[in-house]
Image (cartoon, rainbow, N blue to C red):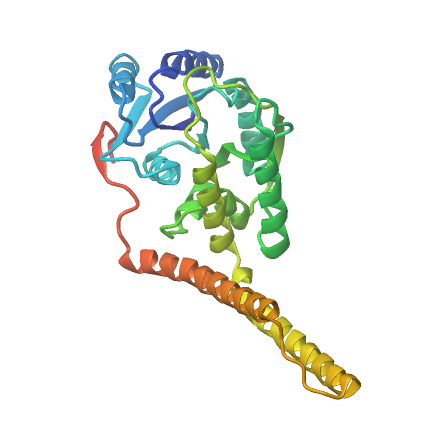
Length: 312
């Protein structure tokens, strides 16, 4: 009997865990030809998340858990899940029930019987999400797909099931600043997409603020393209051309007027602010890449485990 490891990253999800466990076990029980491993990764929660998961594990041998020493982020939780899972297939699903567990049987069939390596879900709408967040998300996908060689599908979700070969490919990528959506796309493999309607959280509040989403997007752009570094080169060329045109204009005005005229303070101030701002932007972009290099060189652990019932 083949095994599916369902990896569930959790951060302060105590309000919804009972409902989630009821749904996921119902689906697991319906898949009679598969063994399930329910691997919860507690990402340093400050509520009763860990106690609830431990309660599940006492009554259900399928439940495994990993508890971090502090909050390391969802990317680290997903990595830990892949490193500790033991299934022939592995998948991710959120604990807030925004991902429907009812799709799991169809996704399993796609990777086990239909010849696909990955079965992944893609959002078909952004119902319930603020217009501002939707705008930022859509803009991010447009930007990264224009400047990066790795194409990331708009609306692609972490909710997916993969063969063991795909899991090993993902684990071979050891960078510290992880952007899993980019990693999924970069490793490739034959993927079947499942349309998935946006659902409201069953309980609790989202942990993704606009600030966190912006940082996540920044990690994606910096991790999968070096195009921003070329801004300084293109800007320098643009300024050289602009200054040459301006010099030609000054010469023409000198010849036409027949006397020297003084530049206005406003023009000088504008030029100084424009060039100064451009220089700071270029330094900032270089600094972002340099900070990622600094993080990689330190090679610190991606996460630290405080408690687990996994065998590894």
